[in-house]
Length: 498
Image 1 (cartoon, rainbow, N blue to C red):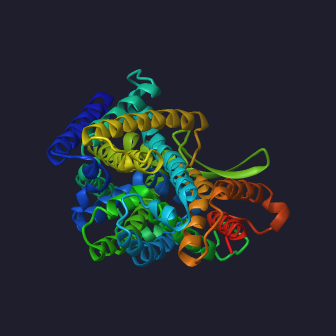
Image 2 (cartoon, one colour):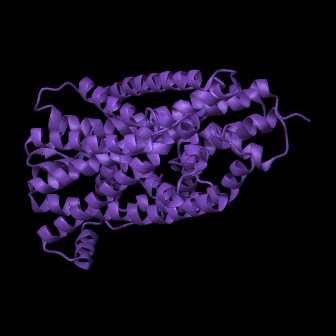
Image 3 (spheres, helix red, strand yellow):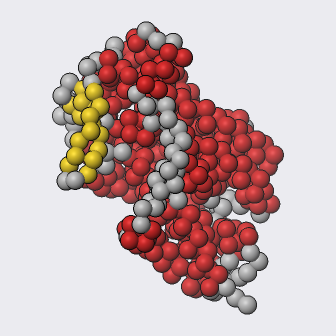
């Protein structure tokens, strides 16, 4: 596909986003930016949050992971649904009762000022790392697929995309994002469905026949019964539930949109609906992943086992190129499918890119303004507060640019595995802080809380690094998040006040 045409499509797509932003961002203020004036429609929020929850990582990494883990990611997704129910009926009532703009204000009321600041900073670091890892994946695909051939450097690509995001979030914030995320989620899901139908037609298979073909390759295996394995189904389901509770329920970005809904009951409907929709959508992504490998095999590709430095791994060679994991969808869509499918892939990919990045930038701006700098308590004019918030927004965008460049240097082969691994270290203290606040009545020695929040991830890192010495054949997977949260909880228990 001609890269000039693909680039033109991206520009037109962004122009549409900017038009929506201009229409929805009129007469916006700080309250609009932070919580959408608490007037968002719950159905729009639920639908738009699909795009935020999935992101470009799900769009590319989940289908690519089928070659390695089969349909095993569905185990985590079942846990996600459990997590959304917990958020709806435990956390949301708490947030609405306290009328919070930043959810970390709960920690201030419950545990103290330093606990509040610790929670806010943990979120800022966690979301910055997670969001930029997702952003990097999509920017890198666009770079390799389109812009390398035009001689555009990676740094320029990342900078231009971040400027695009700034332009349509700068004024309206959450008020605008609720609408742009709905548009982008629609484009992403439409692209997913069209790609599935095209591959079924090309392969000459119906849905049941495609499942038989995938089963013969072993792709349809969901549950892992070996309790020693990091992918043991009970561990994966538990990890999925806690990942959702932390990365959604105690994450300012996700809760910022939910709290923009007027009524608690509607916000709860939004959350539970989101859980069921995600279960179905991720199942579709896994199904598409199986089709991608079948399609690649029909084009002459094959999966092979390789051993490097004593470690066994897999490759998927297609026309002499290893396109295993994150690389298979871009390779097949752009180089082995007709031009119109390439266009649909690019539109769907950038539709997956923007919701995860724009929401994260807005949420980080909100948390820095409210939690770190105490913007709401400053005796400034509204104009001065708005000017300050916009400066912070630009600083956050610069931090995104730096992190994307760092991930370019790391260049991990499967970003979804890396993101979930990092979440285990960064979100664990938040899980412990909220759990201690909700499930105990104790106060803590507030000045010691930051030490606990640093010590718990450090201990978790050591446990993960030396797990073979500590546990033998038993392997820790994504439940590292639970261990980290538990260590934080125990640490807070040790510094509780009588």
